[in-house]
Image (tube, rainbow, N blue to C red; front, side):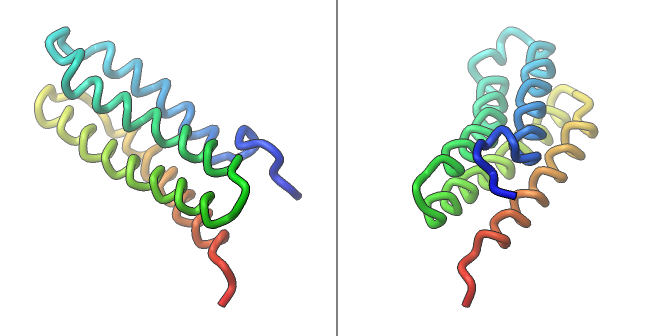
Length: 118
């Protein structure tokens, strides 16, 4: 089966849903956080599906892998920021982290699958 659109990728679908869930979470943060941690969390969450999409639409596998690497980095950044939100505000992030860990595993697997054969 050939993937024609990033929208067909389960990892993109899950990361897209995670980004919308992150916005719901950050809506609960204090107004003073609007341009601080809240903004950082939102940007990292949006970066994951955005980079998956951009990479999938590129013309070659090397670029695709590069953008997946950026998505993996954004996932690690988001993990750190969610843990900070939990530590600072007592925000419940367990469900989001579980979803994020699943996405991280999927990104790792997809990167491995796209590696050139030796």
